[in-house]
Amino acid sequence: MSRQKGIFLVITGALFWGIGGTVSKKLFQDFDINVEWLVTTRLLIAGLLLLAVQFFSKDRAQIFDVWKTKKVAVPLIIFGLFGMLAVQYTYMASIEHGNAAVATLLQYLAPVMIIVYLVFRKQTVLTRRDVFTVTLALVGCFFLLTNGSVSQLSVPAPAIIWGVLSGVALAFYTLYAIPLLKQFDSLVIVGWAMIIGSFFLSWIHPPWQMNFQALTGEAIFHLVFVIIFGTMIAFWFYIKSLQSLSAKESSLLASIEPLAAVFTTVFWLNEPFGHFQWVGTICIIFMIFILALNKEPATKKSKVYKEEKPLKIS
Image (tube, rainbow, N blue to C red; front, side, top):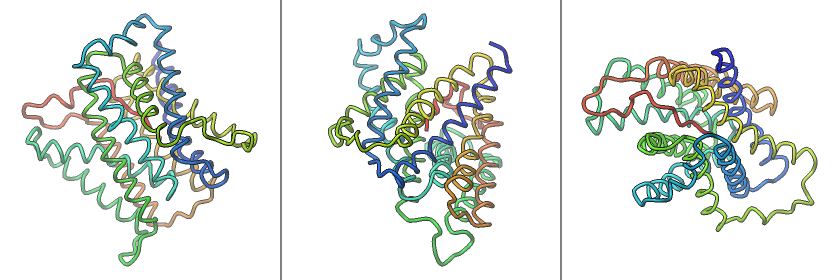
């Protein structure tokens, strides 16, 4: 595959991720779609489609090989529940209580959380670059969430709590997936993780418990976009781009996701966004670019940041 096609795929996938969050917000506020139902349905359909893509590849046997040993099956279940499901639910809950722009930017604090975790575990050495990126993240969050006011928040507290939890879940999701990715293709791991998460959440809100007759054509269009384009195709394009781009390049180009979320939230949904919130957004996006340009900190014994296929999904 040509390099130009890889760049097109990763940018398109990242745009779908960012826009998908904003479309989800519209589903929540205009069509009264339940968060639990959307997450359950989104994970189930996207997971099945990703496994279908894998089935038509050369390594279709991997789809069932993951269940042959407990050493793989148990971690996969843990990853599906505390990684995939946790990331998806907290992210969507943050969008429901706030907006896609804030939810996406808070989720993108995950790399900073990983740095702090690795330093605390003494698996990496704290560098000046790390200090700078953490400072950017903190300053960005302050302006994003307060709009420069020290007396009040400009974002609802539940949206902040769910957004921070989304970042924590994404940090766990990223670190925990590494051993699994070394053994199996990303499509297999993520596809099954989505199905596992959907199966668990379906006990709370089954996907068939929905008044489908009440759905308008516009609502169905938005649902299709979130499930197919904002989840399945976005991840597929991202993984496909790695055939011609390095993981570092794909991560850098995927940084367009929060920009897409911010601009669609502000200019499509007409959500208010203050001047200082734009300053905070710029700080966080700048932090993302710095981390994407140089993902390998000074390590001691850990190989956590060895360049692997990045496992990104929003």
